[in-house]
Image 1 (tube, one colour):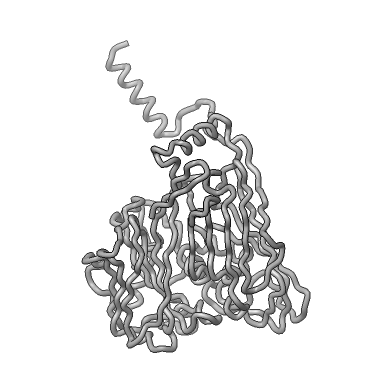
Image 2 (image 1 turned 60 degrees about the vertical axis):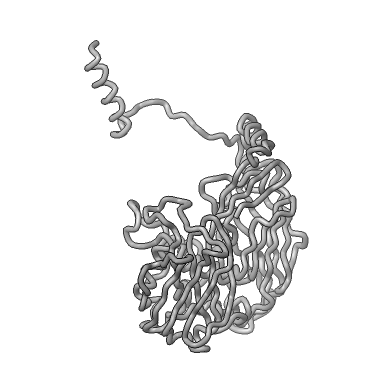
Length: 426
């Protein structure tokens, strides 16, 4: 056979893969020998509002798949009238903290209830929200003040409801879709969930919560011995900083804007940032803190890191602000080569043109250098390159609607796991 014929056959063989014309026996590349859902129980079996729920995670030597792990929540309550809420049962948690067994702080998410409301409205597709709303005790339409699904709306005592809250909404560690959480990171870790001081502070009305009984359900995987041995050897290699687990987390702060203006310095140093976003609400301790109000009908809004402006010009209306927010949350129309995984609320739920529904205004800016979806391309911040959001002429910042502002910076952390110790790079 000539070289020309051999080359032609090789080319045909290559194109057979492209045209789905390969007929060979499939082989599994899985290194998982067994998968099971494990329960992890808190220090106390029942809590009340204002308490701090504590878990010591007992996943053992198994790896955990974060996106399919969740918090089982059994609630005992009584109704004085039909209950209402803006948000979901994530509103119960004001803070979420996760510590490595060595004591190293992996994550501390302040204003976790506000952040979860933003994620459900802007980082969750419509179809996913339809699946989630019954699981998490949310409303039919995000941002509206209506009866939470899963509650007994009739008046009376001694009622119980059960909810299942994905841990990926609370913690970035559990939102990693490219790495199993290794046992070196999670086994023996301490998780703390701080409950809001009252039902009203969680956005719940006409309800008295008598007990909250949480349980962790972790999607655990037992690795084959060869894979487990390799990972253990790598984690013991201190000269190479062990094994690295990468995740996104949030820095948050809250302040009171004045004079129809914003001037926010996000005082957090990070090597890789992803996005920055701000919301404003009429209160910071009642049900209305989840009503994200507009900056107004005309304003001048811009973000910057050091001398780098995002965008180079000032945004002057909610319509364009909404587009920038969709870009930041990877949900803009035709943003990438495939359809966006996240769509969230529509612009009608953000602008003041629909005042009855205008409780979803989130002002976000992408900090990624790459607009093509290349990961880990975000701008660095430090004390000489501070991330700043500035806004002037904001009629919505009137001391009533946009009274309290909460700003979040999403950035990347890397946990270097070395057997029983852990060092976090920010």
